[in-house]
Image 1 (spheres, rainbow, N blue to C red):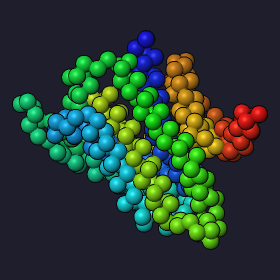
Image 2: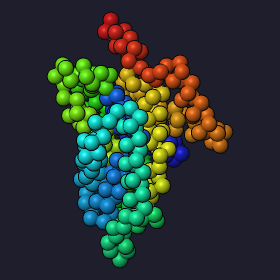
Image 3: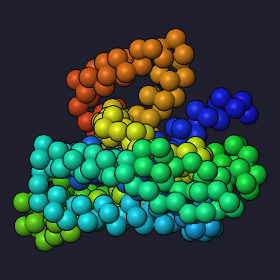
Image 4: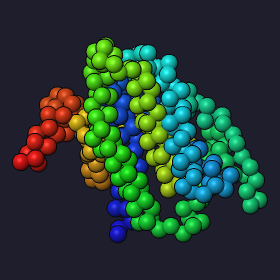
Amino acid sequence: MDPFLISVLSNIGLFSFLALSAWLLLIGGEISFGQQAYFAFGAYGGGIATAVWGWPFPLALLWGAGLGAGVGALVAWPAARLSGVHYAIATLAFAELTRASLNVFRYQRDVDGYLTGPDGANGFGDIRWVYETGIAPGTYLALIAGLLFAVITAIALASRFNLLAQLRMVGEDPILAGMQGLRVLRWKVGAAAAAGAIAGLGGGLYAHLATYVEPAQFSVMTGVHAVAYGLIGGLGTALGPILGVLIDIGLLESLRALAAYRMIVFGGLVALILILRPRGILDESLVAKVRAWARR
């Protein structure tokens, strides 16, 4: 396969984790501009686990996902009492606090005669597991795709057991949901933990592919894009945010003639889609129609 195509598909897969993370909170009624923070926890945590501590790669990914879940739950516990713009600002503030902390975070150890680990604003390099083990780019792409499929399958199972329907109820009308016996705070914290785990898993995969991460990579715009992917792709299915990533990275970034105008085109596209379809392309009504047609 063409190396450029492998690179584009890998980026689509990696940022799909971040998009799914933001989407999960969107269907729970909240907009989070801070999912890049959990992506960063996964990237730094997973990178430290393999490059500094010498952990096996699967365990490092689990550690990154666990960090994302744990921090997500801790942040959501007080933030879940907020809503709307206040929740969005709180998540953004936490993400910026995380990025500022990474700028001064130093944790380096001697590994094979070289200082290895995060070095503040200078970033964190030498995350060499993929290259030391000789994994080909195409093989790593298959790993990304497999784990992304596993996440989508888990979300589909949650939907089958009506967990997503209950989360949507919490998001649409928390007072009514509470009257029907749903513990709203617990649902919001649980959703934030699951979203953090998904972002953390994606971050761990990202760090090992890139071999280098730095605080600047986890900026506000990364979080804004994560939310935009879900909004334009649609809130009706987990495939919605992935469609959003495909439109941005797969279409706009792959067309080199649009490279200089990518942000302008993407911003205009987001505005147009939200005007025509306020809940995205694959919204709940379209998904319901497709399911009804499939049952015939």
